[in-house]
Length: 402
Image 1: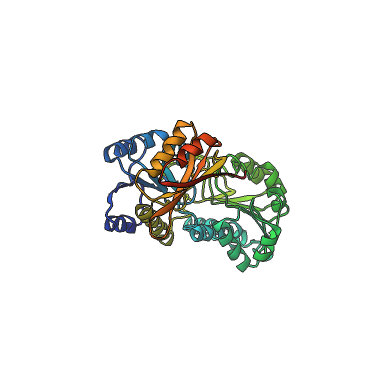
Image 2 (image 1 turned 90 degrees about the horizontal axis):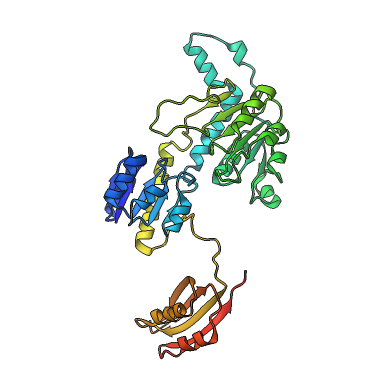
């Protein structure tokens, strides 16, 4: 199996995959056209990326490509829809960098309160400014609003609670009962979660629904002088609205991600929000710890080895949640060569499309049961033709709910 790695990953990834019999090509410098040419040249079955973008042109350059793995949680840098249209699996490694991102989130929060980076900058300039910097509010007893309660959000909850903060959470999947079990306050909307909060941190994926999630309404709901942290994705926070809130309401922001941030290989970044004195920025380093890198590497290897050995793709993000199947054809049959081919041929002749199917073998290997989800009701004549085979014991149709 040919594997192309187009980003810098833990060395264990190449080592373990090669030990599993894969032919691995690793080049973290591959980007854009160079990446497309490498895909065409190596024609891998598996591509692994971290920050490198994969467009439709990249996908089309490798006819053998069957699996794309993102060494992280989000997949917004991959054309997932085009991959799905070509029958290519897209998988990710959710939660493996959760602790690293949560640690940086707390670091940004502490820095916003104690202005540690400003202290350091002043000292390096030869300035002693104890009077200016000795005005922190403290975090104990303050209200932290968390938007999004995936694995990263949960890691932030436990750390904020250890600091003695009151935690209020909004998440699409969170229920009041779950909030009680976690010891957090439930909020029915992002605005209600932000209402009067002293700090806000956001941990959601960037989707059309979450773009601009932290906008004017949410920012206005925060307490004056509140802290805003984004270590999720640029675009989740409305940067124009944030600058306005910094200017008019004294907010401070700790940002690890920016809407127009450059790629990892670029060194220049001119950004109005990055230069704003109320913004304390880092360089999209949330997942950049050796612990997180090793955890992601282990998950990448697990995904490839599982797919190689069983055909199952762990953490797949682009399978259909629901198909167009309306009925299930259940066929009990002899486990012999060509029996299922004959069943599928009859469905083809009837113009019936197969959505999903599985074939279950019974003990002893003499018989099997095929469960075939189809897009329309097979008529009695089709069922009769299927049952006319001496290798078919019985065929029945089940109406699928929903």
